[in-house]
Amino acid sequence: MVRDAELGRCLADKLVKIWCKDGAETWVLIHGSVQSQYEADFAERMFVYHYRIFDKYRRRVVSLAILGDERSSWRPNEFGYQLWETQIDFNFKVVKLSDYGDRWPELETSSNPFAIVVVAHLKAQETRGNRLERKRWKLALVRRLYEQNYSRTEVINLFHFIDWVMSLPEELEQEFWQSVQQLEEER
Image: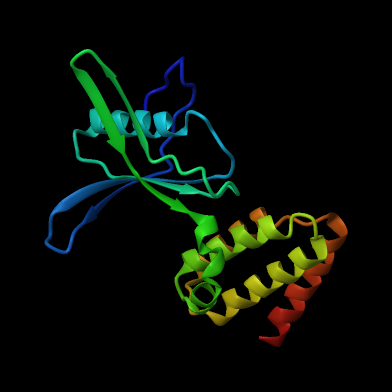
C-alpha cells in the first residue's frame, strides 16, 4: 500500500493468496481489523484499499470488513459516486459481530478459533462497566483454550487477543493470573 498525504497511513491487515477448490488462484483482501466505532469515511477507505491492492498486484480482490461497534444500524457496505458519464459502484462484504450475540450456543460449542474471538469481543463490550464479571469471562475463555485442541501457537495468539481486549485493573489482573496458574497446575 502506498502512503497518501490526503488519507494518511493505509495498511491492509491481511493480504493472502488462496487456492479455490477448483485449483484457481484467488487473492483476498481481508480487512480484518475490528472497526469498533462509527467512521463516516469507512466505506471510502475500504474502496481506497481495494483499488490500491488491485493497482499494485493487478489481481481480483475480495474485500471484507468486520464491524465490532455497538450501533446495530451502522453497516457500511458500499461506496460510490457518479459524475457525468462516469460511475463507480463498490460493494463489499460486512460481518457485524453484534449479530452473533444471539448465537451463544453455536459460539460456545464451536471449535473454530474465531468463535472465541467473537465471544471475547462481545463479552468485553458487555462487561465494560463490571470488571469482576469481565474477569470471570476472561478466565472462562482461557479455560476454554485449554479444553480445545488448538495448537500451541493458536493458544498463544488467542490468549494475547483475549488479554488485550479484556483488560483488567491491576488488582483484578493479579487475581486473574493467580487463577491461570492454578488452572495450569490442575492440568
